[in-house]
Image (tube, rainbow over all chains, first blue to last red; front, side, top):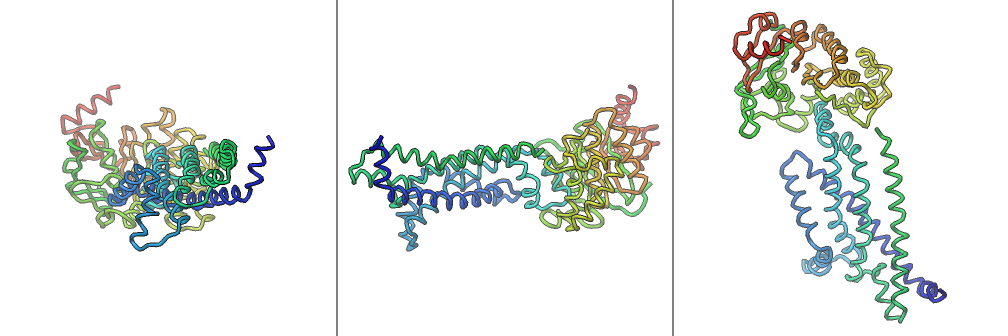
Length: 218
Length: 248
């Protein structure tokens, strides 16, 4: 047991830096993909055919590309176009681009749970598309969106570990450093799992709170 | 029977749902202050006709003008036109996440940019007028069907529309609640509101309508004052339809 805690305390700064970057990646890409995903979702349900086509193409292209390939594009291909983005920012962009495709589909499925008559009544009052979406449809769609949205965000939090393969020192990169230092891998990996469980816990609690809050809204 | 200049004019309107010719060369003029009741067997296109007037259903050919202007195709001009045409649906379609008063005040505040306090005050007066002011702070699901439909009428009236469209407003109601909704509609008609009403309520057609339109297979078959239509329907389709519904 002493050995178990020694691995953590002896390498505290590495663990701290790794998880700090994981959280930073998660927060930046989380906000980014929520915003971009909502926009893409709005495009997919909009009355403008060109926007719908763009949304559908984006989702089908990005969602079906392995995340490691999305990273590889940003880290290896984009610099060839004389665009210089550092590794951390590349990771943020890759995660945002990838996750927003999934968020988009969560938004769209949530919108589809709202009866069409709700949007029709809003349009009949003279509301614009943006008003129909933000005042009438999305508030009623949120409840159905919460569980799948949290699953997507949890998946993204875990997907941040792919950044380790592209020179970002986040939690997924810790095992490599630790094996250089000769630390026991079993204990190192267990600590990383514990770290992720702690990070995911607030998301689970948030899901509970939101589900409760919106359950009584009608 | 036209009481004033034409407010709603449909000219040679055609619409297909795939191979189904749901509106077949329909022309119709509704005068300001006129109450037109549209009847006909189900699938005859009468609901679609009603929904083309505020372009909830786009048409394939022909023209529709409202208050002298052709219906805008999309965007802000279309939204503005819709704000001038009240619509009442068969399934009420009250906003489920808003209280009754919020439902009524939302359009004036968000579309007309009225002050919330003023919109709420007028909303309450409208709810009082349709007899459900005491339900103002409840959610739609807490009300009976008749109360919900009266709230939906108040919501449409809050926009101070130039005309009101009713798409089978009593078809989803329990029989004992039909009367309370028709009462509101009758008083609206007597106050001079221009109304297009798709309904199966022949009593309402008889006493409140200026004209009865009979539709079958997407065509406008008859267009006559109610006394004339019910006493002497000219077409076989109308005779057949009336014999089926009036013999019970």
